[in-house]
Image (cartoon, rainbow over all chains, first blue to last red):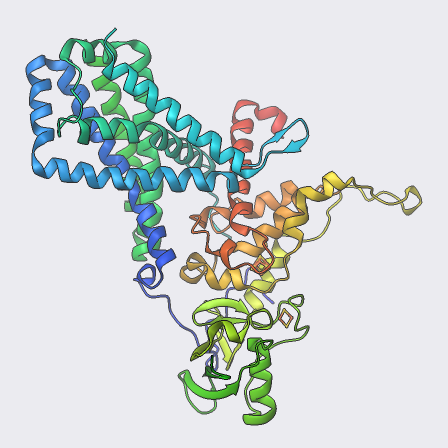
Length: 139
Length: 118
Length: 247
Ligand code: SF4
Ligand code: FES
């Protein structure tokens, strides 16, 4: 047997099937996987949106107002609603899968995966509160 | 033998860190600026207030980190989505260049914009 | 509930046809019958030419993996009555070349398995007179989950990445590498890392997670692969920060 053997190309009696380019349409779990991967596009979009905001704010109050008006136009609004759905999908899948990738030992004992997931969500709540506080409360 | 890719662990580390950043920061930010403010559910912060928040050095640093890592997150994930979803592995080089190049360019842009905040 | 069930069984007979066809068999369906019982019934009473693999009929040998209604399953651990009144589609495992009927070629998996050195590696073997290598129950728990693998290849069949790129070393092989890495008696982690940190090793995986879902032994190969990535990344950083110490 060859050491890094993938199948020998010539073996006429074997029946081989090829994976379709649209394999991810065939099963719900595969489709969900592709949606999860596509959420990355919306992550990139949020970065762009955020940078546009930063650029507007650093220019002038007028530019900031223009940004706010722009964000109200129906196209931007629908895009952002869609983006939020994908961002939430990203966050939920990310936090839920994290325990599989991470094994944390505390005092020689392995922490249960649910605890890791819960602490992730706690982190999300904490960060969200800080952001809301910074932006909404006058100080 | 296969080509060694000593850089792969680093890219994955950025991908992971970016995934965490996006998951932690973006739901709130996008909800506010993308939906709640435009729809009038909440009043947007006034200009001086927002400027004060953004121009704080700590905010700028955090924003730079979040933006840059999130872009690397995008680059890595999108690259593999193209590989697997469309089976275009033969366009390898150009996909890599576009994805990671885009992330580097985005990081530089973010650094510039955040630097320019008064 | 009906007491009969129809099985649509994939047939591939290279001497007769170059494509797979389906034969329908109408079977009795007592509630204790698994898919394998159905296949044995067919082979004994209806069509003796049907080919498939099995041995232990109790989920240990790992030879009866096949697709039941498109899902990778152990034929000996999948109850027919769960699918009543049918029809049930039985096909060979996906992502492998088919030799005949439900029998797939598994040489690729076997050679991948040996590549990751699934045995305890010692830099220096200690002499027999020094006694056995001892291990605490806690140390056993570290890797026990990964040692449950029965090499049934259901995870390979569920993995779209393996289907797309047969060079990908795949879920079970990586989980087994982790099984030995996490064993307190083993010293081969560095050698395995060499093999698995190549592009066709762990990095091809995009955490689809299907391997973990279909695994009949709850091995969680997807988790093993992600943990491996994390470990590899941490080592990369260590080698970068402390180039000397890593050598
Ligand atoms: S990891 Fe699970 S599904 Fe994969 S070969 Fe082992 S027992 Fe079978
Ligand atoms: S016959 Fe042994 S695992 Fe099914």
